[in-house]
Length: 203
Image (cartoon, rainbow, N blue to C red; front, top):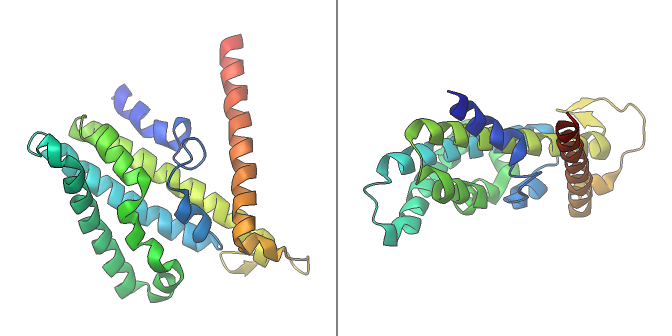
């Protein structure tokens, strides 16, 4: 049980895909102009990542080593298509905003990284814990970036005006703003991580 908790929490902080590993950031920079986009993208990737990890873990002894990567991509593509069609049918406005980035989950480094680096070698329970941790770690990171950009760029939070008549920084809704916000947040996370390591060593 302790190992499962460790696997789960690892993705939330220690190896957070966005703030610590800094991979799969294309979508984190492209769709994070509003809080709801971050939540939707985070949940979509968590679903694909978890389902793919479950299947890869179950089939790890059956898939021939030489064709494992193509097989993983087929598995990931299947679940990505399911998410894509679900969003298109039930959340059309959100689907329009997310555009190409939902189908691009197929080639998102995070999903293939966990399939190849963890699920293909670990038990089913550990693979689920790892996938959920990584997926939710990605989700909270991308949502935080989205909230900062939406508040500073539009003056709203989930569509509700929170800045009153304050000047909006339109640059926050543009690509340079995405890099700026992410750079600052990565820096803050690294400072927190270093401080916690320092405190641990002191004790």
